[in-house]
Length: 409
Ligand SMILES: *Cc1c(COP(=O)(O)O)cnc(C)c1O
Image (cartoon, rainbow, N blue to C red):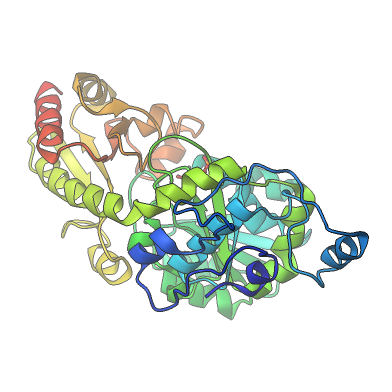
């Protein structure tokens, strides 16, 4: 069913009633707002502002007494459709879109934290998230502590009762695909009176539902699997209605990281094929993980769907499926990793992920270049490591490409 605020601000036709439907169905129909033309596909409302029939209704709309849109920095029909579709898929109370994944992460922290507060985060974070936690927050008097995310006692030790207001993690992690215990970490957060924020990009909304495991806020870079075709940037924050009403709505409205209606439309159409893409990518990834894991040139493979994954048991309990990514370490360090990547024909060298095109990256010289070698090794990121994002090509072609490149390494 429509979230209250969207319903209020929606002068268009009624939404699909959709509470009991499964995610794949919600991803196709959820949140659709049809105009009087009855269009099948969602419309793109490329408009900055809105008009009012008279001054009285302008006043009423600004006072929130009358439904309707006011300005596209605050809300826009196409963006509202994307938010509502994400909300339904995630099973959240509320959703708000942002221009990028990083805008979403930053808003999920800065919207409610203030000087004197403290944040605990896992060390294994997306590079820009680490900058926000480690460098940006402390500039504004918000302290932060980084911990090894798989070590529950480290989380407990780092939490300062009354001061720690947020715990932040991603799972599976980038690039080693370690799986963190969301339920247990949520319990640690709540005991301390803090919120747990989960960056769910690597898991996707198809394989992991952090809110049902006790997380308070979920963030996505919609740039990844949600678009899934390498076209535009986007982000989204999901939580209960209270958090949006108390903190997030005002922060986004006044600081302005609004998602473009055009990008919202691309992401809406991306959602329609999300489940089928992620399922196919994961099935292919599982097959490739075995091929890679059995190759004599490979020292180690990291794949949450395999029995040799360090948190295999937890992955099985917490996630509905493995991952569309496979990380592995070739014998022979950087030179061998480069030989392998350079020998690939179908798979492209790129630092993005979740794309329909298969992509491979060498984390220590790209996404994690900023860290010292010591900091990289502390996270298990070696010079022979490659992160492989599996796309939608024919699995046989990918298997052939990867096997040939492994032989060349
Ligand atoms: C890509 C990514 C982000 C940042 O998203 P952008 O859309 O590039 O701003 C944040 N977290 C994770 C885990 C990511 O993979």
